[in-house]
Length: 586
Image (cartoon, rainbow, N blue to C red; front, side, top):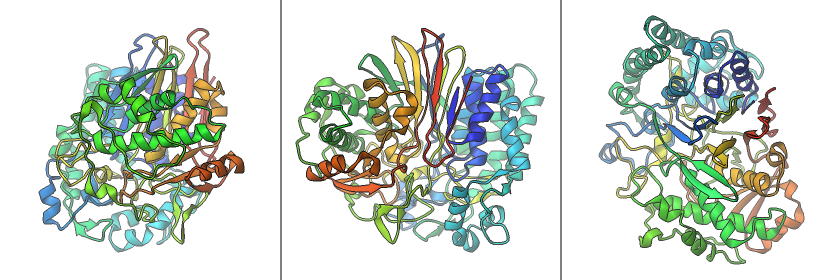
């Protein structure tokens, strides 16, 4: 079974499964299609963390396709350009592209098929077209002036007679189709084993014609989100030095299951902290004001810890952050009143420190179509209200389970059409993940060449009795794990079926420093779907939460697949919000 954020990606993965491929093969097929059909949400030049485990090899493993800061991305370089923070979009916001290589490493190490076999659907849609989503058209419309005035290569590709493509019209990407075909020629001509062919393709990406085109294009000056016109610092040498790598997952034994996440170079361990804190507080019923209040407050505490302790330069041991005694101490901070403070803890007795700019509390709702990653965009005329279903820069997700018990949870993102100018020689844009790093030095997430930005991308895998049983995830930037926590509580604790847990009302808080430009907090703010009902939402308000009521189906983008090891029965669920998520299987 497959669940993803676009029906064509889910169908492509299912095709591969029907042809005898495994979950890794299917995930790669879906991922390559997502790069074509959701270009406002991800692309080959973006980022990708994923988690995989199987019945035969049940130890969950993380594949990191989060590229690091380029060698030339130094604080001194930004200071010389007159910048006191990393822009939210444009060439200087670019980390080393990691998504495409990660998909190929997954295929090589855990798949069974060739790149040519799994890339067929993506190549077809890039060459011959796919019906463009209304959200893609709206995104292009929001940045059309920038494209026309400065990012002219993007205008040449995305605008039709000076206007965005009509929703539902066929759009193609012949440049990316040409690139894929050239890469597949490298695979076919390599000779040797399947794995050697995939590695030959990867070399053409990181050391061949793709790297050469990226190197030349990144040197061109373009406008950034702050208005500055500057070149980037990414080079071909940066691409050659990067390789997606395998590492151990961070795990938590909780309520009879084991929950697996990425390391603290992502936000994943915050979900584990929240599950422990909710347990320690003894309030997990999301049908009550007490349960919702406790969950929101637990997330404020975990995200404060994320700001102080998470990042690729972090020295704190995760064992201290995930110590049950530490969780109990954090839970004791939760009172009957909503907190508006940023309260990082002191794991292992360490003194917390956060970036000076992390204390910004204004501008979180400001709209700039080239930056940020909120799944629901704010109306600039009425920033306290979200436009129903309106998406800005965001993310995709895909989960796959096969007949042999392999599960894959993958969250590709970055390289959005609105994050950086289109590179016509290869057919994709670069990402803007570097905006998650601080120019202030000495912090876990400070800008350091070769270190990874602290990504929000956070897939999840769940095991029971040591066997993988559930893969899930969601787009949504800082909200990804918040929405997953409500899903997991409802499914694993309350016993709701996958689809029931996905459909249930969602909420999240923005009362902590955001990961995306302008990195602001909204103290006390909770966004909640109206389906919670007046009694619960008014109950939260009575406790001091600033509840911003949203449309009934606006928050959350969850995907999930499951497998019962006893019977072999597989299941899946997809998000109905936005009406494009799709679960398929047999």
